[in-house]
Length: 384
Image 1 (tube, helix red, strand yellow):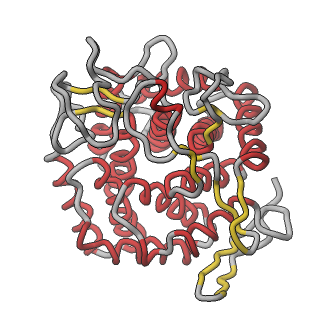
Image 2 (spheres, rainbow, N blue to C red):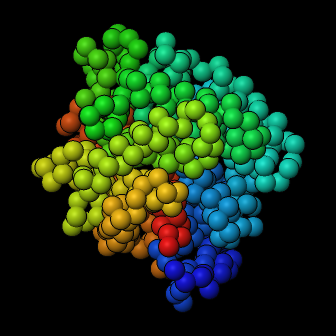
């Protein structure tokens, strides 16, 4: 791959900040650069950051750009400003709130400023108070004990950054414990795919989002392998293994989990579009649809696995090549001044049956989808 030759310019236009980041070997920004420019400059400027999980996923993508040397100072300033405007809400009382806490730990590590470290450790104190299932898994809900596959990514953002900040393996051990506890209730041993949710109690609970009665079965769990839910798991495993020292005893089990899941997903990719479906095990079935956020998540995790030597490039490089091409051809939408966003995104989704997932609204431009797509783009472009 050619070295990058086009570097970021800060352009002020009609009150919007447009970031034109570098693009390897081309005279104009690639789709990932144009997407990051739109996401940070127009869609969700730092002054409009919200302390929540979806926004945290996009924030992670921009923080990663800083780590990768793409628009370093602009990306750092974005994270700093996002944390400043939300510092009064910087708590970790449930997993979706914990997610944004990684920004405080990131700033503490990168800047050395004590106020960010204090905020990060307060969030960790909050995290330790979250209700847990009997097996130790932290509850996705703060008013009823449920384990969701979403949770592992939300808490991983924070725990991984706390490890980077401190070098203390307790944070990785806690994350490994959470992956094991959630897998106990959600993982299908045959395929490595995860069901979406599990409830500690069979008592009905209406969260205003999930299908009523989804846990009314002997296993007390959802019946479907949801695409984006498994995307959260793939990204969590890839990022955890990327950080985890090889000598840690928890590593072998997590690596086996990751390899099995990646192998199953490789066989479920739609060859024509390069995408995975909303419910990946029913490709092409009436009512199902290609879904870009899980496609970006799966491809990101597999790309990290290839780069780290966990997944063989001979088998998996064609998978991510096809995903990159597929997003480019099927799921990009021009929004303004040649900037792009992501389309074919399943909107925010809770737990339900097959018809529930098939019936979810398809939208453009959610922070979590933009974050996943930017992360995939940036890692893919660095593969040899």
